[in-house]
Image (tube, rainbow, N blue to C red; front, top):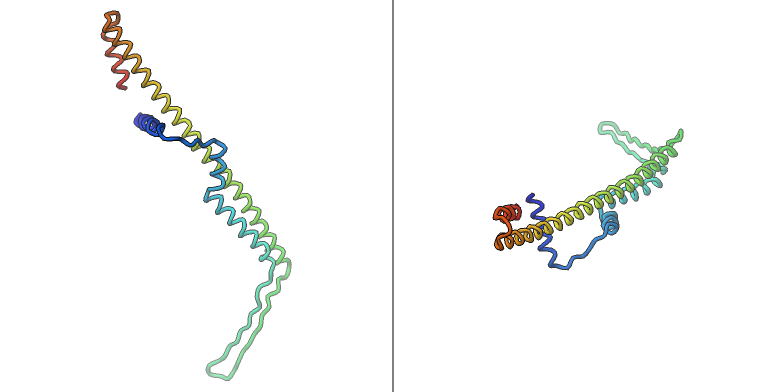
Length: 171
């Protein structure tokens, strides 16, 4: 009940200021483009797309030089890793699969952002409708009290109607 009264008071206070109306579609579009989750998912998609090209490359060759302390020996080695048995194509396929999953993650993040904006917009709409109903019921209670008071003052209505109307207005 306190939340409804707060919303009603906020609606009365904010009704004096010019309100910029946000439509349902605009709220969803803004959430889709401004959501950090969508942006992060998009960056991960860009990263995984770049990894597809890198996945099939060969590793760098290495050169090792070793010396011994007590003997006069010098050892050298050169290694060139060669991907054999389809290792290169499997790495490319795995990177491509990660890119596809990252694309799905962008879709999921977009849907989630739009869903969150939809729920927030509907909650706001419901709160505004509740605030209007509270204000309307307050005006109705004032009208009923005025009518009951006039009837009581004229002698055609019982005093209990005035007491009941004041109690209803206080609620």
